Length: 252
Image (cartoon, rainbow, N blue to C red; front, side, top):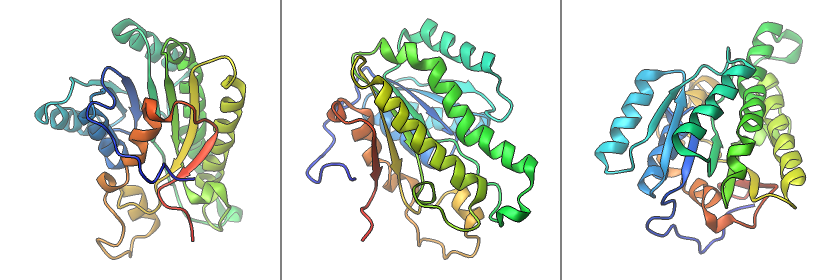
């Protein structure tokens, strides 16, 4: 499904909301973090690339956004304790969490399953599926302290319908879709936490450059052009919406 056709973000849409964005050093994560900050949110920037986080931090401050926070973390090697410490830090600094955008992802390689290296498979699953599970679980109490909390899993068309050669990446995104639906079903009746997924479609990111190295520059939109639906999903405007699969455009 799509966000409502007539929806437009109001000024200060995310005022006083605390939102954690993974993969925030570049691409869609960086674009979403900047846009959330412009809408009034205090953004926690999480990525393993500190230099990229610092750049996004400076861009947000230069644009007059609320002072963000930086949390360097390598999802590939993170342990269960690391996620516990992340949640404890957020609780100590902010007291709650109003939004969580799972954006960080690894493509790996486009190869037949018959030739997929087991080590690479494990690595992709760790970053794309295990990390969102562990992070969400660790942050659930923080999210429940919010009057209106939203968790969004950035997804992909290959996670909703399997496609040859997309291997661990496709399986991990399919797992995220199912995890989202399970969480939405479990927490719909007695909490104010909602869960949805969002497929932005083709976007000019580093991940897409790996998948389509010969693609003509400018053919796919830039990250800044696809993040507006995330404002809807992370704001109170989608308060009653949970367990849904959103796309930037409905396939024709």
